[in-house]
Image (cartoon, rainbow, N blue to C red):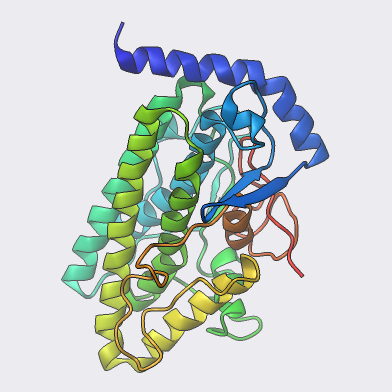
Length: 323
């Protein structure tokens, strides 16, 4: 039996043993959080007898499934934008309630470079979904309901854009309408993915999957850097585009706690800020609760909303509450 088969078997066994306890936490909405070494340890469920569980942290299965929810969102957005279709049906099934897609359509790209970059990222995101589903086996969660619509003024993209001041009341923001809108839509997601994997990496106990998560983190960082670079380059000719990216960054920051960690694509003097880092040159982290605040588009403790109208699947489902 291969090492991969053994690892998948271990993950599946742990998932079965933890199911009853996860159900309890889902029903009670238990959330515990702590901070160590700059990484936020958030438990929105989980349990078990290993050291990770004893520290009130989520298990490897829960972390990977949380990541899979985010990869579903990213891959569907990019796949529709590039190919005009969603993921194949056989890549959407799993545990939990499977949901459909609201919205999504192909972008009529004008800039061939943006079109090529979008295609490359779309293919990478689909590969991430396939990898995580294979790693988790029968423990993989199903794709939840996802809202990536662009013409509904009450859709997730429109609500996010309105919170950033990009559109007014009753006006829709359509990320499929132009190259620039697509880049701004992608900007909403990409930095969040990087910080989510960065925050989760210290919590993964299995070295094989820690290495895999580090690999996906690297890919997401490349994607984020690419989107930020193109936005900055185009923003040199269209300052409003740089301002829009900064407004999205501020809106994200308003949702994920009191710390001002999110950064736009320019510094205070309008110089480039392609790589958002702290004073030590290190990328920052987000807890699962922080990430869910952004994708649910809320500052409250919630289990659904925004891009996931019915919530995500798995044990890590609750966003954090902030004053």
